[in-house]
Length: 98
Ligand SMILES: [Zn+2]
Image 1 (cartoon, rainbow, N blue to C red):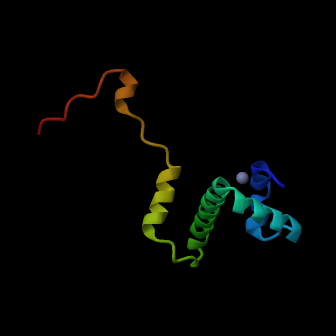
Image 2 (image 1 turned 180 degrees about the vertical axis):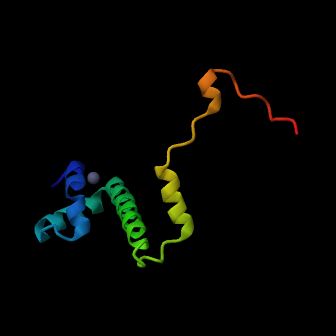
Image 3 (image 1 turned 45 degrees about the vertical axis):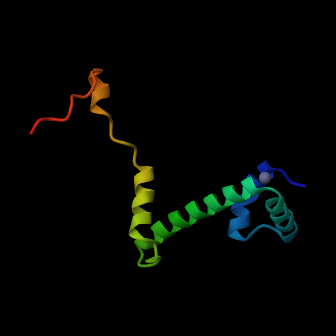
């Protein structure tokens, strides 16, 4: 039986389809017994597909990527803007009066 760490190790090969049949069978057996690994695999595959789709987008392929998904990916990769209040150590003023 393989461990969760092995699953992590074989994940790339599994998704690429290059995992040899014997390991693949063991891998899938582990997934049947280990829901957390399934969750991990699903999330991993989704992010891989998103990244791939984003790459292909510029080449006229992968037009199926919804804009909101693309935005979500972009938003996740951009660091949050610095909080101006953190710079001088004073709390931000109440809403500006207009
Ligand atoms: Zn596992």
